[in-house]
Length: 277
Image 1 (cartoon, rainbow, N blue to C red):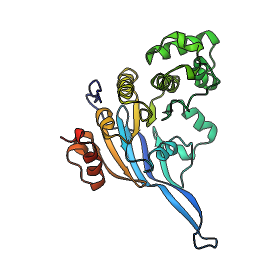
Image 2: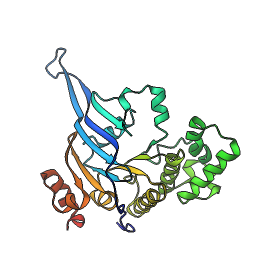
Image 3: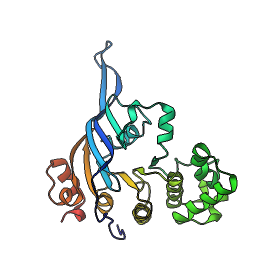
Image 4: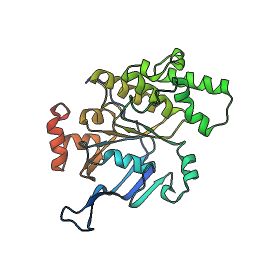
């Protein structure tokens, strides 16, 4: 992978933008194999706690099924936890109403894994990117159109894209459209859920570089979810390693990639020898 440099803020005063404490999510597995009414369940997220400082990138890494995407959706309350707490800028997200949560989502956006499935194929790109503006802002159609064109330019697409449909674009271009949509409301915090896993290596590297540039330009804070340790290492300020629903290790990127303590972290590093010092 060729990624143009790594971005680390010169200095981060660790003031938590997001605080997660003892977060747990269980899913039922149905009836017991022995019959009867006994219920089984799986802990997709198991007593997870961490903070993310304003302006940093926390890389969340682990194999498929480790609970990473579930954790991201819990933070945005797209699904509800069984227990625990989530605070954004000091506000308890689990105590607010759904209408207040919708307003808070102006500052908390998500970029989905699949650029093919996350864009409505019936909508033109202009309408895809403008959708958050229609929901959250009262602005005129000409101003909205101008904002959409500006957002597309920011992610490397020109205004001719506005009248086309998602199927007319490549995977990397579709992911750029998804990023433009996530930026529409000028959020403070973005959850990037495996945003390059469906792309080939060279296109994925371009998207990672774009996200690093956007962080510099807009002062964004990321939770960047990936199963790829090389991608996480390039982009993240700190790394959290997730295994079977738990965060088993968390720390500065340099420490995690050169002095890891947990056997699972070491196994991830050994599987990607190019990231081992």
